[in-house]
Length: 77
Image 1 (cartoon, one colour):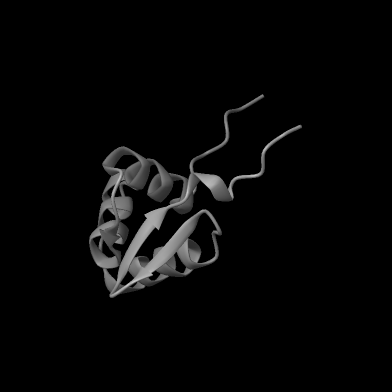
Image 2 (cartoon, rainbow, N blue to C red):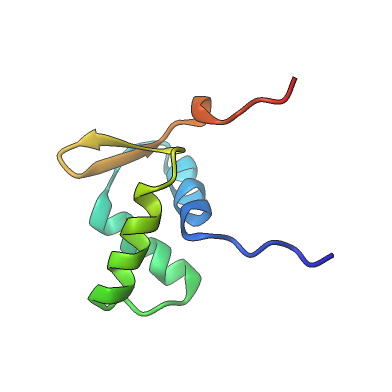
């Protein structure tokens, strides 16, 4: 079985968990693009932004800052 490729949201969670503080959205999506080896042109960054918005592990704090909320993960019983 092949290992699953990390998604944009997986990279964002890793970055935010490592920093342990909120990050400005543009800095976050640029860092995700760089970690994934993607260009930082507007189309790529828009695509990453959209994917991050759809992931419920990431929380918008306000004023353009996002953070990772580990408590939103489903826990197995």
